[in-house]
Picture 1 (cartoon, rainbow, N blue to C red):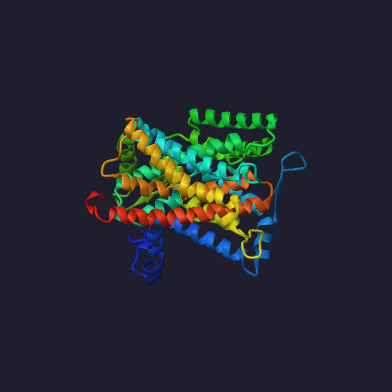
Picture 2 (tube, helix red, strand yellow; picture 1 turned 90 degrees about the vertical axis):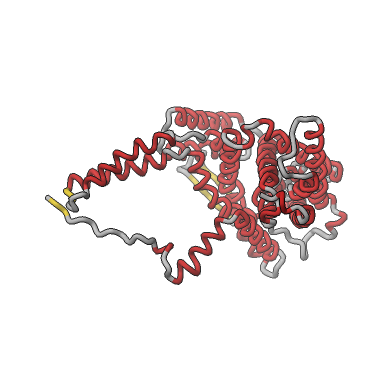
Length: 462
């Protein structure tokens, strides 16, 4: 039995057409979302909205929203989870954020700048200095006070915000300088994850921790056996998250471990794609040569197209596929929700009277602004002078100084550690205010310094 040929679909997709909505709305939005600064802008808007809402006459609704209960139960056994909406964002959704961070770290280790040890040496040493000095500044300011446990707050650089600041300067800043800042921020993420895992774990429950290790082991075995289905990994991921949550280790570490386990190599080598795809394409093309498609040919084409789709997908590594999937969700949904849930510090009518004399506020602020600047710059200087690292091509010491200031933008992970550090919400709010003040100051000053030091040397921009 023959079937008539299918009606061909339009060659131009609606989103690419000249219609009003695609032209005026869809494509401009796509261009915006493709910009490096877009994620930072959305996060900034969410943070401003949170601060404004928390200090408005409707502040009660803000805090009631994030303190509302969120409950998940499986039967009547131990698999029962009670969270607030804020905890759901911080503990569940932020697991995806840390999963993405781990994917980016692994990509740098396997294919990126960390693969070349000498190229990675300078930003790695700079990152170490940029973690040590802020923690020291914070510790000195808060020693013996209620905020001393939060020494890890000013250690991490926020990749999205810091890169957004540099991106706003366009080609004035050399590409090598942007790569330096990005690599430094990735190294910072590694340090921040280690600090969270080791120093901000409370009341360790070994049986639950053992259960998490078993789940991670299952994911590792499945990865080594090249299991393609997402279902086993999803089940093991949820199990490992729950076990870590019950163990006392912060549950977001599950995202880190699973990200590092994600394969960085494709199932099918890229060089073999053409040879494997060509027979499938030729068979489909041959079935329509006579403009008549039989039922058997139609069924064969469906199978061939599925095989072609699978081949195309699996020629891209799981790591790159997951980065492409998770990146937009993290940048435009999860991190803005995190900012909305955590940046709402009540200043007007709250317990914060004079931030300029409050050490819990000044600790994170000066740690980020001064500690980061001195730590990154001095560590970079020592690394170059001792021969451990070298300045990137076209990057001068004034540019390194501007990048060191910009590295003090420590929004997401800094707020995250602030939440882990204090049981007293009043102390936590004061620390969050310090993070916001320090990050804003570092972003603005870093932008101005970089604009000034690159104004006279546009030839270095590439």
